[in-house]
Length: 279
Ligand code: COA
Image (cartoon, rainbow, N blue to C red; front, top):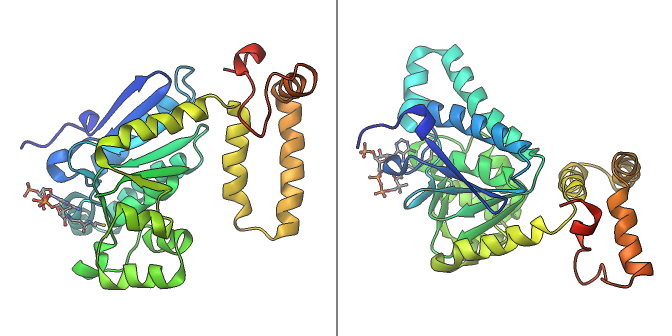
């Protein structure tokens, strides 16, 4: 199969406010080379402030989510060129993962197949993750003689317990979607033929929430993980107060619908965004 042009290494379809973004090098199991990394950053940045996009889903074409970094184009070819090329390629990869981690809208990783090594970067970058039960997750680095770099060791240590992380990193054995859910690498695993339907269902729930509150929530949860309780509490007070000065109408409208109108209960679902113009 001939290699794809840079612009074709990522595909994106927007449907009903969900942006379905795909790693699109199925012949290379969607491994991440410099071209894909550059294109992914462009696609993500383009989607971030589009009014017709409320949720981003990251998935892969073919049998793979992503087989990690491209051993030829990312590693070997840049190592042959020297340190400048190596650092340049690292920045291209890490910068889109970073953009995705702090994306303005909710993001969901939809893991349809292989997920190896460097792919743990974008896996971690997404807010939520749903896998096919038969997807395969692996820190394969140990099998070809390196450590799980590019953030992968950090990801496994963050998402699962110490023993699982050590076993996963040192043994080079894959786990399937079900085990990945048990370990906390993904929220849940479903049969492959139900994967898209389940992700769509989750995305639609998110689309029914106040977008400002969603953004504030995802950033708050990411930030507080490294804070003491007291620092987190203080940070959250400040963040909520700042959010109030930026957008207080949604909250007031929700309070009105609950207390005055009695048309919804916050414990049982979201208020009607359409009536507050927040959709
Ligand atoms: N880097 C570069 N090329 C890769 C790749 C990677 N990470 N993963 C797959 N490819 C290429 C293969 O070289 C092959 O190319 P070719 O058609 O030109 O020969 C093509 O993708 C298909 O791969 P293949 O191994 O034949 O597919 P498979 O379905 O039998 O196996 C994997 C799939 C994912 C198990 C296997 O490709 C693999 O082990 N990939 C490496 C995974 C890895 O260690 N990633 C960590 C990097 S940090």
